[in-house]
Image (cartoon, rainbow, N blue to C red; front, side, top):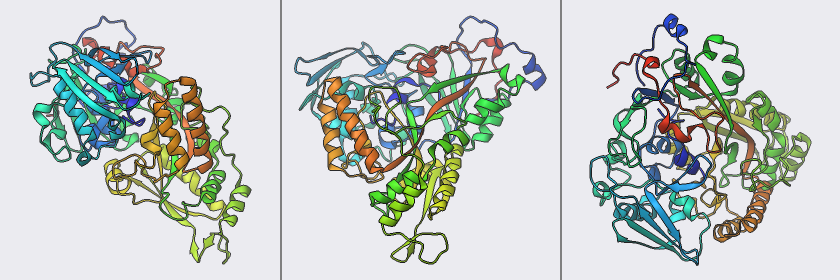
Length: 551
């Protein structure tokens, strides 16, 4: 899988997931001591909310985070990451790599079953590999698996792949591919099959119901290949507005949500009644927010224009004003502090004079004195589109103001997530986006930046094409020496910074509030984050809300 979902699919069970009923009356709830120590017991319902509804639950086809977040509770992969970010078996009990590093043999666990009680075998793994590499399915994840020159199933418990050349991210890729049931999907069109809304998986949970625009309800899967989770039901409410989600959190109608900096730093700490029932968590995430250009639209095909806009934007202003300082100004598409982040690179400074000079060099001038630059008789005007994310919308407003100061007219439009993806991203019908990338553990970013990954539904939707970057990305996938790989990706990041196909706005922190009724959360969080063991979270009987049916 590409960096966008690798880590999330491998280690997060329900941080972007999970409606149930009415909470206890406010006066009663305020009398409950949620800090009391309670023994582990199974049962109860964990409630969460999502801003965007999945387009379907076959994540290799959907290619978006909402789908991956839900489906990662339903499907397993061959491998997964433990709390220390080391690979371990998921469906696999062991694996062996050949001496030439080209062949991996996976041994599946015994007696694996799908939720419908049918056996899960290596034939399902082979079917999934064939599906992700089938051109008709146009999966954005295909490139990792197209490097496999041969896949075979010597027996029902053995799956073997052979690569033309040793492939550095190979194991990581198999930790991200969710295995699908052949007996239900063979011969089906994965883009139209009803399975995408009524899946059968093998993981801790199965889908009970999905009411469009309202909620998804998951319950424990009796045939889970990893045993039973502690919590009976995971229920996800679809609440597009983050402020509405927060009202539900305060009203005790959801158990956890990601917070914006204002809620994390100011609102909750200022309200003792919220601190009594909510635990706050802060983690430096493996993601960043960016402003991306459609490089197939003029004038964004001109590197001078892209660099000018980079100089014209005050990133620290965005970090301080939008994120209340809970962000890092970056110059590389990698998590700060990791070996892959090139320490010699520095972010573009805020320099409007430099921006104006570059725009003049690119042929722009204010010929009519209205304050807006023109070239070839056309004013420099474009639209920024983003999804309905308040931080991104606020960032766009600050960008709009700074660009106006150098003579660029900017409009802003915020769009509901599913429409945003289908109408604009997959069609390429946009000028500029403000979005985010969530990154995986392996530094390979072939699927995002390689020029071959520009088909509808693939991740290089901005149309970036640089032969030098292509060569580095191809080289990095085949280099097994970690020091040499580091040099490759440092050079890749350097070229990317010079080209400015995107503008890094900030690397942010994951800010989460979880109701204190939920126990079993590791604190402090291990490297894999607080969600790594969410199957072990539990809600004591005495702290459960009074639930009503949502069927």
